[in-house]
Length: 405
Image (cartoon, rainbow, N blue to C red; front, side):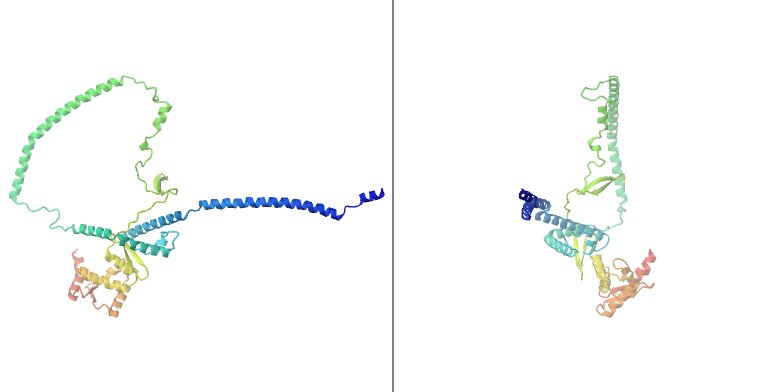
């Protein structure tokens, strides 16, 4: 009995406790492992779904290529439009301008775009050479068709007196022939007026009779003054709903009323628009470090050449070319004051320094200087003007011509 009590009262052995604890821990660990494995699988599935969704949203290579091609096309169109605007303001355009005004596509660097524009324009004009030459020929023909007047405009040629007498006699005969016709026309007009008056009286009588009759509205139409009638009256006509009915709005824009004024604004939701590239008359001048663009329909070749030389910062060559061209084309000496105007904008000191450089170089022996009696300085080329003739032309331009005006 005591042994049984003793056995029952003794504490449990350590081996028994360890076995039970290990079993319990193992079960918990197993359950946690299963749960962790399930969470990992779920997480992996979610990542896969996210990646698949992101992959679906990404544009394909074809879509990217099409978007880049459209961006390049529109950038070219904007570049040549800007060249025309600058040419109209007597400015050449260099590639350094395009990044400043935001014309470089996002997927290209400024240097890449500079070469892209030059090569594209060169290829295009080579392919359309005949078309461009035909445009130039048409313009030359149109200009050649304009001739100066051979006599004072508005002054009629002299007419002999006998011819004047014959003209007066013919005019009197025509007036006599038209007199009976005028009488007949007057009678017909009076008759037509009487008929119109009687018709108006009859119409007035019919209107008075119809005014006495009170017409009742049809059952299918709303009676005047009813809510339905008022709703219909408030509805504007289809053409009156928009203040710009029939107006053709450019693609990519929409009309918006801002502070009571209708203005064109860019439509953010509109599909990108492909712009038309117009570059047939764009010309290129190659410089030492860059190239220059201008539109030959808006800027003469001579002025473009002068602006090019000024931009290249070669005052000696600029000076010599200007002097020789005036001596050859007009012919006349070149006034030093002209070098102060655009595109040169030289100062008196710069002009004098350039003249000294021209003389000291020894490369331009034909360039000479003359001075009018009022002190104005002129330059000329002995290839085209004799010294005495150049001096007399300079005196006339500086002193005699202003005095005659």
